[in-house]
Length: 392
Ligand SMILES: Cc1cc2nc3c(=O)[nH]c(=O)nc-3n(C[C@H](O)[C@H](O)[C@H](O)COP(=O)(O)OP(=O)(O)OC[C@H]3O[C@@H](n4cnc5c(N)ncnc54)[C@H](O)[C@@H]3O)c2cc1C
Image (cartoon, rainbow, N blue to C red; front, side):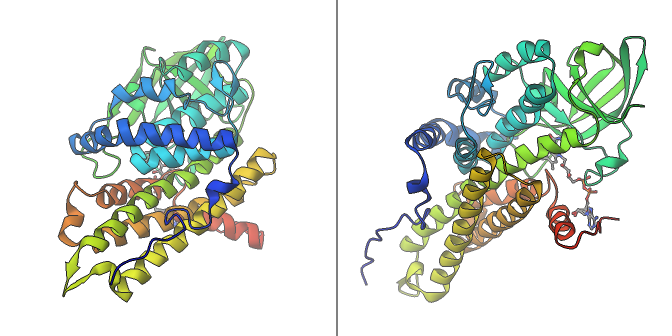
């Protein structure tokens, strides 16, 4: 039986593309081209070699993808839908590349822009937009990332300076960062500090032997009496709302990013099942495979609609963090389930690096964990519905 061609894009069944402005489509196309032509071959190899491909940073910067939502300071000033599309296309390549851009943009440049002094903005934002300075974001500590209120890292005032002691765990970009945004308790509440790589007492140690996000750097950071001048404190925020507001930005991007990973997996299995003949029939001609592919498309479509609406709310200044939690939970769950099912559909080939699902599947184990685990986001939504905090 010959297969007839669909009028719909299997990776965009509800034609989200038609909802985009010309500018947004242009952003998507230019990032997609970069990912297909330059990033995917490098990322696959980098994943196998367990290294972050620093050689891609200058290209990512040239495309204006670092701090793309910031207006001024040599940044592109794009809207939230464009930022989402950037994340989606990058993660279609590899979650590690998207993680690099998310951290630099949403977790480092955003707090400097939102809470930094003019001097801090002038010093860091243009350099970070060009990829000449790299940043990392330190909130998580070894005693439990889900409970940041149990923070032990502490800064104490000493004249005009602060003395920082403690450690951070699981920090993306940690060993290549020129500036680390470190959240620490103080007598005045939680504050953000810009810790520079050469400050005495600051060390970063790479976490090795990861089976997930192998093409991304993850590190432990240690602060042993690091003296930090007052000029390196973010003056505009005190309290956990500082880091949590950064997480809302990054989680928003993740909701889009994981769609890209899921699309890459669906794309691969649609092609594979059309060619793979077992028991005299291509796999795609069987009901069980069609139901599994249809379910992947249903989940991708739902995720796309959630992210699109989130982006519109964000651009109107109406975004609520609970909405981001629901979408981060839904979209990560969809993507990881799709990647795992795609790996299974490929049979033995599914464990080979020649095919994308296993790499996405392994990466998504980190993505579903970081920036709030699935349980954390479920409890945030639960609290919204009931008015009761059930975390304890
Ligand atoms: C690759 C990678 C990169 C990362 N990058 C960064 C970074 O750049 N900066 C940064 O600050 N952090 C980063 N993180 C840390 C990440 O945010 C944490 O791993 C995450 O928040 C979970 O914290 P934890 O690992 O300490 O797990 P825990 O908080 O110890 O959670 C363990 C388990 O308990 C569950 N749990 C938690 N609370 C509850 C509850 N109330 N009820 C029931 N179950 C619960 C969780 O869902 C999870 O299953 C990164 C992590 C990874 C893996």
